[in-house]
Image (cartoon, rainbow, N blue to C red; front, side, top):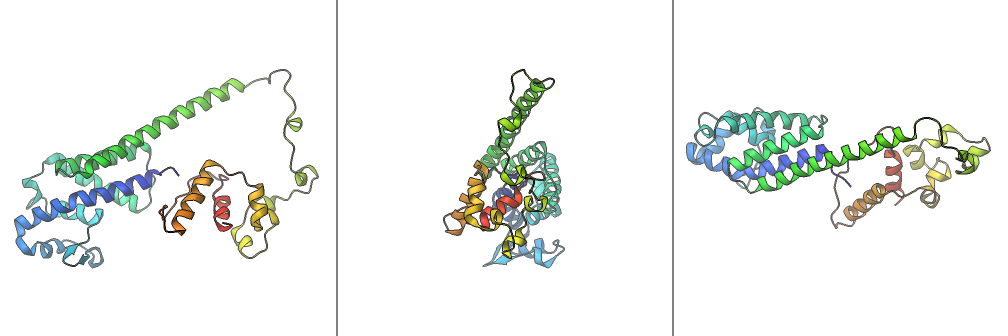
Length: 262
């Protein structure tokens, strides 16, 4: 399943943490000596944000960017420049937006990843290469979506106006489902209800696995979702979290029902 922009940002921040960690520890120890952790901890506003296991600080993007910012003049100004300081400031804002689940456009995502890569390169972290690849992939996806949108736009323009002569009425091309054709269609049965399925009160097309899958067209996206779930459940990989991003009526509930009936 395609990675969302939020997932790209999250992965980039994790690589940033890994790449900056050794540099930050080395520079802090060079200035403050063996007690550098105590010095660093003083500027952390919340006790829960400072975690140490077996003598090693458990860095996350929030903490490591805070330490660099708080100790800029005394420590990091000696090896980094004004540009890197602006990168740190920008990435602190990116991390906060990401933590609060704000939306990121492709342009926002590319800029954030590019800034991460620049900061990582400034400390010679090998993680910079992977972040750069993610930034390039983001732009590739963006351009691909723009191309598809342009094709759709041209297609819509091409079919506007009077229909071409000889086209059959839609009723002769597509046969409505029997309950629709007979006038027995109920709107309430069209909208899937997870709780109704769980309680055993849903109609057969939603509540019975065989009937559900008989009526469900397995799209590529749905197949990928089911595959990821099976891999995860069998401890063979798979994504621990899948973010379903569709418009209203895009199939989020239907996808969850497909997982429920596995």
